[in-house]
Length: 441
Image 1: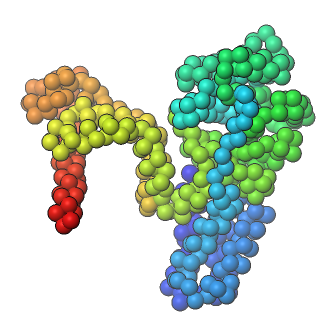
Image 2 (image 1 turned 90 degrees about the horizontal axis):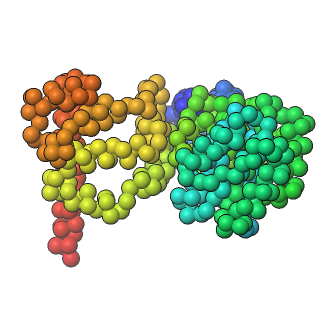
Image 3 (image 1 turned 90 degrees about the vertical axis):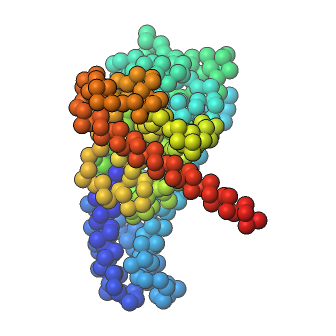
């Protein structure tokens, strides 16, 4: 996500490197390059021009002429404007009513139905809400079946009526059932089309008027670039939705939709979705995205992802085991599974400052740890707890059982020992620092 734009912007800032001060000439050259970078990222010409005009006005302001180095100052100005263009602050969901109704709209293929399930899981697991999904896409064959499958996957009930072809009747029946069962949120999955047409707009407008949802979200495929912006504009004119959801952010997207939608529709992006896993739904934070675009990483989001997966009590117990040098291959395997739950490895690594650029041309497959898991799972419980017993014959058996080579088994064990040593040093170092601080008191 945004790799090409990040690279182009970095080259633009280099025009000011070594310059002693901001001038009209060097600013004009930089702005020209930034405009090209935005256009290459599939940002519309009108939005790119407005963005560059604002950056230029700030850069040439009298109050910044004698500020920090010109290159650093330009980075800050562009960062602030990027965040402002994408909405400045993140926008919360409005879940009022009993039940609260979330109407989800979008074109076919945008990932709308999958998003409904992801949102249901998020509200259920993070907010502790009782959620129901309503299968109101009566246009696309098997749409209700898909939602039922996803609902079962995330542990959320789905209301569907295969014989009923009126989506509004299905929605109202789902809401009545939710009221009777004390369910707090109903997420309504609506029909889409391959293109924006009158039939689709009339249908979604009628549902929006009749249901009066507390939150209406428009789902758009980020990979479609300016087409995404145009469809977002058309839907907004029809139903005046509350926010946008960008899906397929892990695909070959240049970022134009994320940078343009707020400027064109005036509506904030509320969520971004990447991958097919149900956990891969994140709140859209404009300032954090601006950080990532400019190569500053997104450590806050990385920490939040880690906190979601790690239990505080388990972390304390693990810390004690590490300090006593009792960290085992079973613990190593558990930590590996926790990391995998955080999402795509390339996206996670890209949240570290400077790492995103380094990984630009590196492919990190989702099954990168598959051989590691196979090796550990081929061990007996005793071997996992006592890795020092793994002699040559045991390693040979493990290699055969996991479909790997003895060299791969040896490599894993070496990595495990290095990890255990480093973790022990880190934990003991922290303890020593605390003891020193207590001694000073």
